[in-house]
Image 1 (cartoon, rainbow, N blue to C red):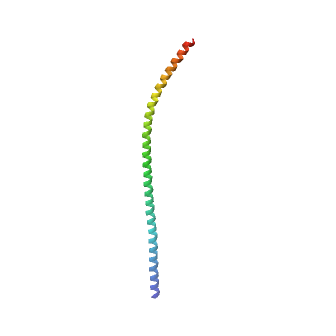
Image 2: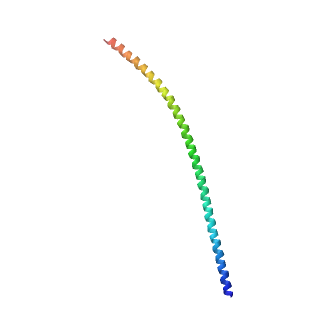
Image 3: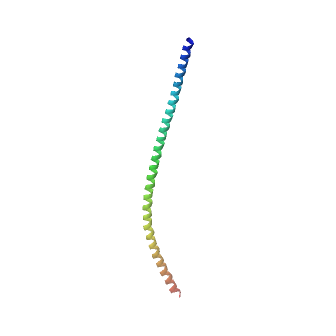
Length: 102
């Protein structure tokens, strides 16, 4: 009878030890998954913030480029008309020189 009680106590001890070990493993696994989820969330938030920042930067620069193109287009038209005037003046000078050379 004493051997049966010792075996019973041993088996109960082994079961309790196994349950404690299993509980520890499950606790570590859950904590690891929670920490991984927190890291993923933090990284996703930072990536989203960077994407928003980049999108704002691109939008701002696009607007600036469009304004610059409009300004440059007007300047280009002005310079083009001035160049036409200069060509006309140079052409008149060439005609005058050709008349004097005859």
